[in-house]
Length: 78
Image (cartoon, rainbow, N blue to C red; front, side, top):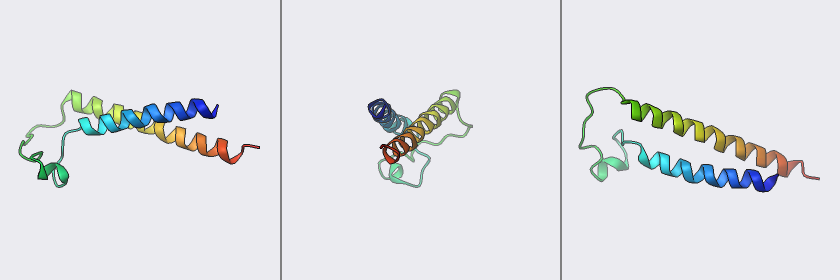
C-alpha cells in the first residue's frame, strides 16, 4: 500500500511542477525579471486558463491526500 501511494505522489508531484510552469505569469515576481510582465491581458481568463487552474487544483488535492495518507500509514505501521 505504501508503494502505491508513493508512486501516485511522485506522478502528482511531476504533474504539479509541469502545470505550475504552464501558468501565465501574473507579474510582480520572477516572471517580470525574464520578460513575463511584458504582455498585458485586458480580458478575463480564457477557457484554457480556467481549465488549467482547475486541473492544477485537482492535482494539488490528490498530492495533498497522498502526503496525508503516507503520513498516516507510516505513523500507524505496526
